Image (tube, rainbow, N blue to C red; front, side, top):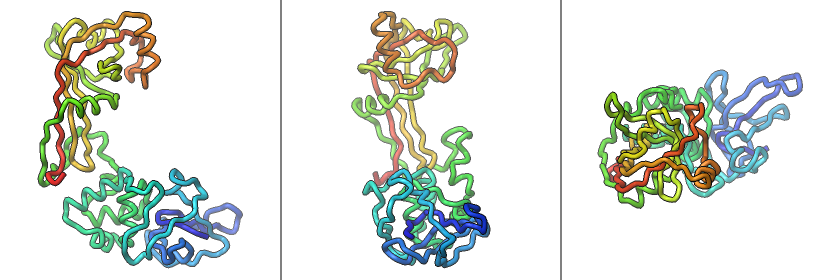
Length: 305
């Protein structure tokens, strides 16, 4: 039996395949991943030293994406300290929970060792959570939230339905102007942007699913819809991204003339290259193209970056 930090230890009941107890492996005592393990039990939240018997097996839940369910354990330091060995891929690739934990810890000026002590877990397991796309148990998340003075829901991103930008600002933010090349690169990620148009009732800003094709911003709409009023006018198109976990973000503004695409071959090519259909649904087969004459952008990041 071999395991990695974050794996699940399952102890089966008398009936074959029936789970009697399970927990998250939060500490290793041998570099090759062999028992014993420090296990945080899901039913009590307590951490105990476990020597698994024949009725126990390991589920490699946290590492399935990297190496499959039967991926062998990678060497890891003892649970008492040190940094975890690199996981498959070689470089840190944190998940959303890990980024939120690391950001909150940095805001409070806490070291990993102090945070781990408060949460009752091994420092190397906390390092693993912050550097890999892990899925900690509810008990581990609750303990981490208590150690950081926040809530488990916040660490899981429970505020995703709230308006963006309600989190705390960076301690030392820096506002940077983006060059045209970086603006084009950010625009080209496609997704949802906002087009500003004039209507009989005044200015309007509406979201649209868009693509970037040969440098032009294109989106589908209906002839009677508000975004269709962009045709024949100079309009503004904005796209942005807000990272609530790290209190940073960027925005790009494109200004230029808009036209309707009518050439059959061009329409067919746009339809074939589209990544998704408009989220609003309905018949939206009118393609509008904006040729950016001016690109500007800004980014908020920590002062040290």
